[in-house]
Image (cartoon, rainbow, N blue to C red; front, side, top):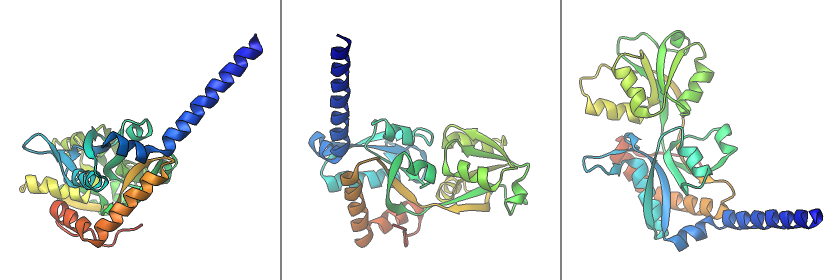
Length: 261
């Protein structure tokens, strides 16, 4: 009796494993059959993603998601995410892709795959113009606001270990901490800081220390070679026909330039 139960249990496990394997191998086919692609995008990180006057998401990442849906010939379902949950949403199947100013790291590469780059991005430390910080050493003892789980968070840990880092759950909270005086400095991307300055022309803020040049990549679930190849084909085509440069000029004020593969 026990042997029979064990055999049945083993067969059930094996069947589930086969089903999961088939599902993993056919996500692109599933998207095409479903007629919809679910894409994680930011709504708190201009110019990559934010809520417009019509209360709808807009930005470079939103437009990139729209381009992929258009090229696939499917409807687009946007899934708003924050920096901490944009990778978990992809891992757990809540989204098919993550287009959320995502930088490539060795840690992330262990759990998701990355497309080729689709947009430029520089990480930096910003503060009041009179703040004397000019180097990593100058950040020691300085209070710096950063979004938890972001590239800037990881870079600060490596480059400025003596800084006092205050972590927030989303980018709006990070910027608000600086604006309200809770932090002397904040870590973010240069496009985000540029968008903040555009909205607040009188803001006393300047770039202090560059952390890294970290282009943006599209996150793809592991073991999805067909979907990954298709996304890369779409990005390469957009490079050739100038669409990437157009998106970058619209949202970041400059062409995308020579992006890494």
